[in-house]
Image (spheres, rainbow, N blue to C red):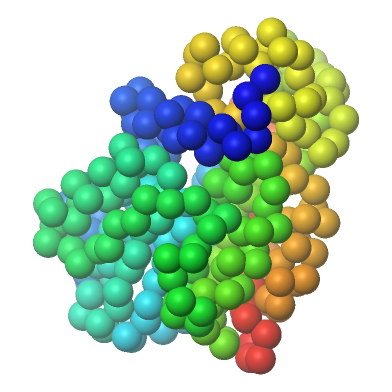
Length: 267
């Protein structure tokens, strides 16, 4: 079993490999998408299928935007193109160099002003307090063992009235055996909270790692939602989503998106 200190390094390797394998979350947007965003015809996703409502976003005029753990050439380039004429500045932070290379590819191809930073979503010490107006965090905190530091750092780097839009996994997903034959019904196998370090056998974990699959952690809703509130964020928006074919998506939504605002102002 890898020690906790090595999880970030292993998951960096796994996501670099995912780029090579062309995972859906690593394929950069095309030129048509960027051209449309420059015409103010744009959308981004935090969860597998649903677009974030446009009224969740603050004005991009002069905005400082952080796309957090959001490499892959998807959200960051779209927001950079959408906010280009309004003077927005977009930074993408990710743990995977290969994922960041996808953002750099789109930026160079389309002439976008996009800052690229390699780092850990739990440690934003490279950024000053209150320096961002918007933080965009697509579904990625399942790759860290403790999510609360992510929310605390988001709250710290947001300006007063700044907005965090975040997607994450409902922990109910981790109750079920994703490899079982689920034609009749999903198979409940695990207790919550789930961890690839403790919920499965060492041989299963070794098999995952030999296959280059990222290690995952199913955080409780207390840590996901109350964690944002405890960090000083105010919940102002919420929706759910699902990914068909992934147990128990035939029965319930398994992904959540939230909009929160740094305390001191909210609508």
